[in-house]
Amino acid sequence: MTATDLSSVKAMAFDVFGTVVDWRGSLIADLTQWAARRGLSGDWTGLVDAWRGAYVPSMDEVRRHPEGGYLALDHLHRQSLETLIGRFGVSGLSEDDLAYMTLGWHRLRPWPDSIGGLTRLKRKYTIATLSNGNVALLNNMAKHAGLPWDLILSAELFEHYKPDPETYLGAARLLGLPPGQVMMVAAHNNDLHAAQDLGLKTAFVPRVTEYGPLQNKDFAPDGDWDVVAADFDDLAAKMGC
Image (cartoon, rainbow, N blue to C red; front, side, top):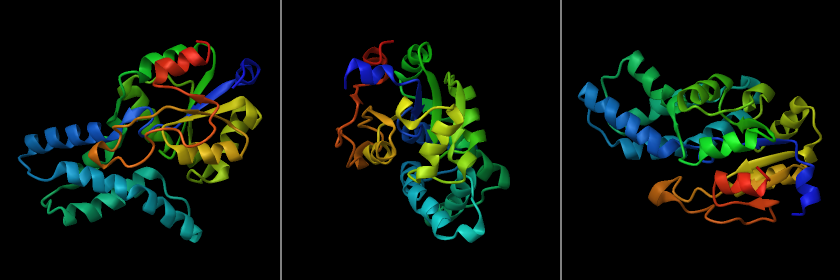
């Protein structure tokens, strides 16, 4: 990408789960420590992996049944959890327990380079989330993790989950910018393909341990992305920060 092209970017929108925060490591640690305090035993790693595995199917179910209205990700996470605890043989949980577990997605930890890189980028660009997480989830996560967003943009605002076009175009609209002045940053090639098709600029930052031993994709860029960076510090350097 040329310097002229880069100079057109005014705002950067970030995928969050996996790109900015380590959902898998955070949830496994959180649930393991919580279970120890509660005297519970279970396959918490397996539960977390299965919980994430239910993520896309649960959003697809919302798309297939629009007559039921939009359901925020917190609601979908809770539905999935209630199914999975039976499958994994976890019993005797109270309503408070289920709420604590669901809110684990609000307490995710950032990758080591996330805060420093975002802080550098924030000096020059408007930086925002563009996540399937709902607004409260993303706001609470930012407070918990110290993520320095300028604003929270969420699928909830558009009542469409990525990769629906309404999310990317809606973000550009709320930013008051044409799509070509917004850069989508993600560790997932499919997210970037959807954004690029709508005219957004794109940046790929691989997170090759996101799924632990289950990782089977997104080790490298598979598209003609405007920027490919090793991490957020490298991204900041490539964006002139």
